[in-house]
Length: 207
Image: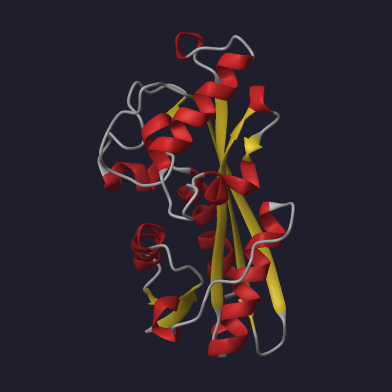
């Protein structure tokens, strides 16, 4: 079976990506096997942050690496938290606290007289970077899903900002819907559809 290293220490993200790769008969290898500290995502775009991670893990493992950089962008907050979505969820002790992040988002919206009843618009971005350490080849593919923000948070499935995001045309958050269904409609699914189509035409990348 072909293998791709998944350049993340986020288990929720790894599981989601691994399921998507199953359909291509590709085994997802967890980066946690390498016991490395994830590199700092210092770029200002999703594409460059994805590349930083893919290159770091790919070069260390010397196998094809796939990184995902994704985030929630809120139009009324100048597309924040955006590329800083993960850091935005850190509390004063450096621990991820998404409940606190949700609270802070709506505090910022309130300062602009924008409330949940007004369905503030937002979108999820997922940028995938596939990197081959043998020849430094890279390709970035991006998916986007538009929707709006409910508050308080709803649902216990999913991870990250899923409990405060409802996709346009739906009435449940990403954390309320079945994970299998989410894998079909999410921003990550949109990016993976592009990756799937690319890999079908470029399967020799595993050679």
